[in-house]
Image 1: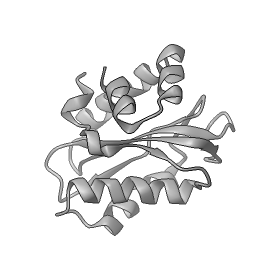
Image 2: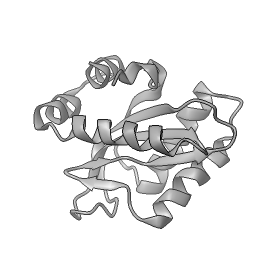
Image 3: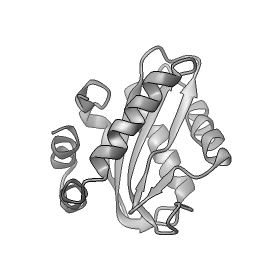
Image 4: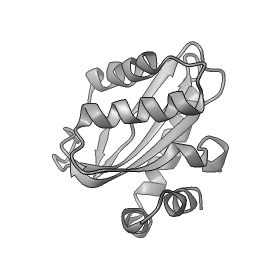
Length: 148
């Protein structure tokens, strides 16, 4: 899967220390809104929260895959956040999270959405990939690594 088809450079960022799960989801929503100003930032945030209420999207090993469905979206898009400091996230392994790949999809595109999440989970399951992402010093480097 070509990640660059859904992730733009301005939607890959390194978050400063002191984040919480809520603040990380707000940052994701803010970045998504900056890239797609026609979408309401609060709605973006609420779509992520709605999914988190069904169960944590923290898949273990410091990785989370938050995602939301939106009626106003006709194409999937992503946001990638690397936290300088891991944050408590209620992940399945109980470990804090420092890599968040967020996906926003059209409300009715379940198959594509699951395929994209599975593809990204597989990529992030590679320890060398995660190690490289965690060592990234700039947002440009982060984007290059996540889309490689």
